[in-house]
Amino acid sequence: MRPGWILRLYPRAWRLRYGDEMAALLEERPATFATYLDLFLGALDASLNYVPPERMVPVAERLKADIVVRFCAFVLFGFGWLLLARLNDPVVSFAPVAALYPGLTLLLDAFKLAGVIAAIGIALGGLPLVGMAVRRAAVRRQPDVLRAFWWAAASALLFALATLAVAEAHPAFWIVTAYLALSLGLLLLGTIAVAGLVLKADLEERELRRTSLPAILVLYGMAGSLIAAVALGVLVASAAPSLLVSQDVGPGMFSVSVLLLGLGTVLAFMGARHGWLAPAGGTGTGA
Amino acid sequence: MPRTEVGRFSDALFLVLSSLAGGSKHGYAMIEDIVAFSGTELEPGTLYGAIARLEQRGLIEPLPAEERRRPYRITPAGVEALKAQVETMAQVVSAGQRRLRLLEGS
Image (cartoon, rainbow over all chains, first blue to last red; front, side, top):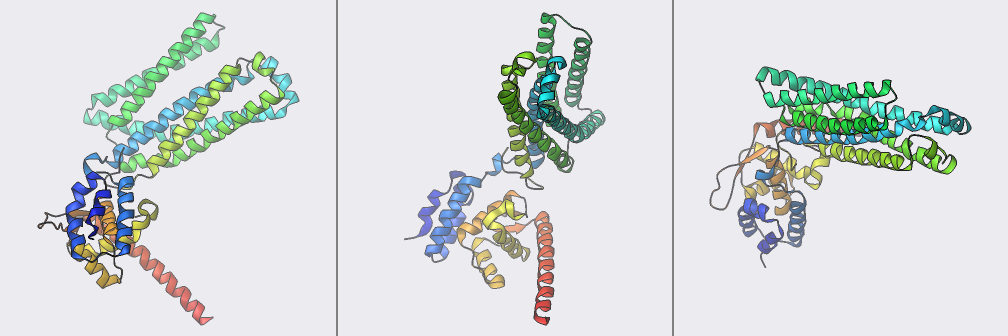
């Protein structure tokens, strides 16, 4: 029996590309058990890994997509972090409990510090990249990139102004609600603008790969912050449940915060793993 | 050509690139050539797994088919990748020889 039939185990795209020449090769040499086994493993490998040329994505595009995924993951994480960071507010009710359980302050500080490290990583990796993209867009006259930049900058500025205005006073409930709605809207708009900017910008593979080291800071910061938040949750629930009533952060807000921190961290790890596996040069295998 | 990216095909990739460095060849000629210079006989599944990976990375490129056979040739990027791999192997060989001499001398 000739081994040509085993080629049917290969995916269709593979057979269209290599089927004829492989069949010709198989007709020219005697097939042994090792040949059948090798073809079987080859078919399995092709089913798992082969990407037809028309579906291949340039590595730079793939890296850009991974950077956007990591940034979106950080935004999710950051929102959760901002919610939970207010656990010690109001301080009047937090301080006596924290004096009884020093671990509370320690874990809250660790949570905040790890989050700040992640933010530093984002700034170290992202700001030079955005700066490069905007300078290049200005020189090469790319209005869509510049427009995305201005939307992102305007969102960040409005968010900062709104936060300052709310922080300086003790506003009514409806103003706080309006502030939260505005913040969410601006966050969404800013994230979309940054994602558009990165995806449309003329950035080279080597420039994009420079974000890999800061990404390690981001990932460790996010993971550390998540672990501290979970430990904090366990400690509060077991030793000081009264905090969930007295503090601004109630049980629902705490759960949502940890959920966002977890989602963001997992998404960031997935994005990073995908990006670092991108082969150097040429094209990658799928988006 | 990091091993993690290519798994069981890493040696095959090197053998195929080395074979094509000697001139363009189709699958059967590559197998014969590789046996001649390395003593390793690649099976067709492994050979075409390596060819697909090298082609995806732009290290080799197909030439027009001759009947059902399609020859391939190494690209400039393939030459660079082969050079880097050969240099690494030369360092490994050199270190291995030095250590063997030390063992035999002791």
